[in-house]
Image 1 (cartoon, helix red, strand yellow):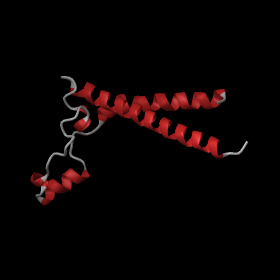
Image 2: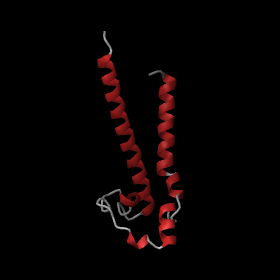
Image 3: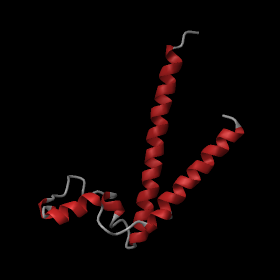
Image 4: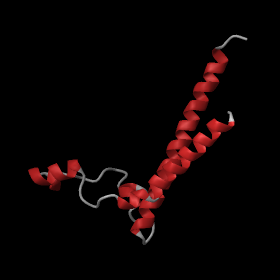
Length: 104
């Protein structure tokens, strides 16, 4: 990978982390579209928690720490890192499979 490509990826990673950690603090506390419609139509009370609702990152990490802003930042950071790790692993597998299928 040449220097310009490496710089591009590093800057992209930094921008992604800033958005996930800092800009996420500006997200609205108001219900999203689906919750709003459910409340307006009167079936919001019929909703049930899913099996993973007690997990560490459910509801944007609510309850990880005593600080809701830190919870949101940590959930965003962990989400970005997990997504990058899975993407990297998938592309490595694809690249490796492509290398094996090319005759020498």
